[in-house]
Length: 132
Image (cartoon, rainbow, N blue to C red; front, top):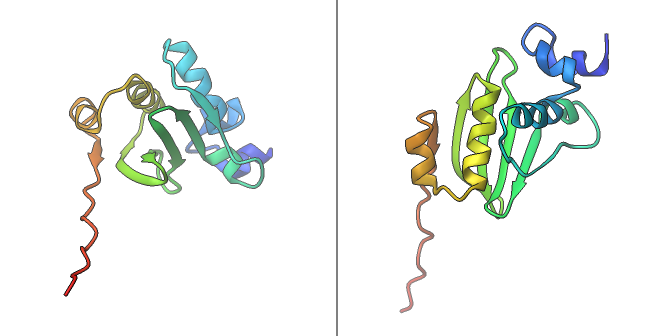
């Protein structure tokens, strides 16, 4: 059994095993659908090099991970390390569409309207120090 098949699980992600991991599969999927998803990277070592991917653009980073008990893709849209939106989807093509739409400049509100599986993360404002 290959490292990729051990890390990914052939039963849930045979297509990713075949392509050598999540990042190469995302690159291939985006290319097949004519989508510009930006620069795609993965960790260089360990299991995560097969199971995680980051799609980089001027808008921020789309971080993608895999479900371990069922087939789904977990998506975080991050700016300066802060998660602005999050979602889960079963179709890798939809992941590429989210990344391409964000890279094209859609706002979080537009993304969550277009992709109902994405949810904006509401952040509470930081408490203001009382001067007394």
